[in-house]
Amino acid sequence: MFEIKDKVAIVTGGASGIGLATVEMILAKGGKPVIADYNEESGKKESERLGVPFVKVDVSCEEQVKNVVAAVVDMYGHLDIMVANAGINPIAGLLNLTMETYQRAVEINQNGVLYCDKYAIEQMVKQGTPGAVVNTSSVSGLVGQAHELAYNTTKFAVRGMTKSLALEYAPNNIRVNSIHPACVLSNMVNEDVIGHEMMQQMIALHPISAATGRIGLPEEIAHGIIFAIENTFMTGAEVVLDGGWTVQ
Amino acid sequence: MFDINGKVAVVTGGANGIGLATVKAILAKGGHPIIADYNEGAGKREAEALGIPFYKIDISDEEKVKEMFDDIIEKNEHLDILVNGAGIGGNSRPITAPDSLELAKKSFNVNVHGTLNCCKYAIAQMQKQGGNCAVVNVASILGVVSNPNSIGYSGSKHAVIGITKSLALENAPQNIRVNVLCPGFTDTAMFNKDLYGEQIYNYILGLQPLSKGTGRAANVDEQAHAIIFMIENSYLTGQSIIVDGGYTVQ
Ligand SMILES: NC(=O)c1ccc[n+]([C@@H]2O[C@H](COP(=O)([O-])OP(=O)(O)OC[C@H]3O[C@@H](n4cnc5c(N)ncnc54)[C@H](O)[C@@H]3O)[C@@H](O)[C@H]2O)c1
Ligand SMILES: NC(=O)c1ccc[n+]([C@@H]2O[C@H](COP(=O)([O-])OP(=O)(O)OC[C@H]3O[C@@H](n4cnc5c(N)ncnc54)[C@H](O)[C@@H]3O)[C@@H](O)[C@H]2O)c1
View (cartoon, helix red, strand yellow):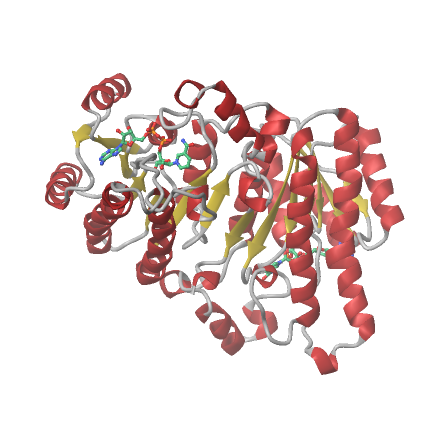
């Protein structure tokens, strides 16, 4: 097993939702997580609450990502885990999706993950130590969804780059896997924001929800991310946490 | 999360390899594993060493499987986890070979019908007690991709994945989650250097990208780790977890 204890981990999007739950689990396992997020307010708040470092970064900016990796290596001397998790979901179909919105999704969801993987892997190779990279894709990286053109496109890209990097860095014992959540409770996805009816529709998409009456929880996705970090023989794989959605 | 502590788990193929590693991992989490295997020597020895029950069973015999579950349920009152680890490899022939179908049937009898027999009687009990249970089947990378001359093994392992998906959808309303592990080449009685010879063994390792980084095949603890993950994750159902060092990614 890849022991998380004492390992240094950067978690992008770590100020909220799935990323924050992952930060908490890494911490509980004795690891050293760093919250990397462009939301300064919640980033600082969570960082103080948990006693872990926060670095402000917009993952769509290559220079900033490079600097974050350098800063973390300065802080701890090494980097062992990258959770490239920051992402956005601009809901729009072909004819109402502006090119600007589309580009922004590509910059954050696709290029952002690429930059994080690039500078983390570069550092891991330099260290000559085993490493774990986990990229957050989505069920939208596995199946199509109407009116989620930019999201579908970028989340498929994340799945593809995961496999290419897994093969390229297997000889270095750096594992790269992707996580594919379906709907998960978050600041953006909850009954207060989307309303009761919409939430019921969302719940109905997941076979397991017939029993649980809810969508996924950030902790359930973080549990999958931890598994992908820890399992020393899994690489290039997809961990699909969707309550059975894509099985139908 | 689904807490393994205090849960009763039947592990077929639990006398050896991946099954035995899973038995130990469940025990370490405070669960109550039961070894079900047709290898009496290893089964008894391991069960005694761990202080847990052993049932001698050929999973392809439906009548005996039913009797076994009846007895387990009578003694334990509940059954929360089933791990279908028992399986057989080999039996590889081109389809035109005289004994090809006979051998393929052997694989299907254990890998498919054996898995179905155990699912049937375990899930019946899980439904009766109100669900919230976990089933993990074990297929293979050859359930995802294939090889020449593998109608029996690869065919049967593809079937295990299909069965997993259907059972997952069928039992989701009872919160009985059904998932499947697809191991890559893992050092066990079924795959090892002595059995295959050094040259073929090393050739096969060369097909597994991560073996270039680790210098080895997967080990049983890495496969058991994935089985434990599938048991514990309360949002996971119908899925294949592929622990193959990148074999199927290429
Ligand atoms: N919530 C869901 O239903 C769901 C489903 C599938 C996949 N996902 C994916 O999971 C990941 C995490 O989402 P979440 O549900 O936790 O949502 P969230 O909105 O709670 O968290 C996302 C975090 O990412 C940060 N972020 C966004 N853009 C950034 C950027 N350019 N640079 C740095 N930080 C940035 C945000 O500030 C926020 O803290 C995303 O990639 C998302 O696409 C979420
Ligand atoms: N080892 C690998 O490289 C590998 C790769 C992919 C898949 N698998 C699968 O993993 C599973 C576990 O195999 P393993 O690698 O631990 O091998 P193993 O041979 O060490 O263990 C298999 C166990 O199943 C038992 N068994 C076989 N047929 C049975 C039957 N009819 N009834 C009851 N018990 C029976 C055996 O006695 C043995 O204890 C199998 O389903 C196998 O197909 C293994």
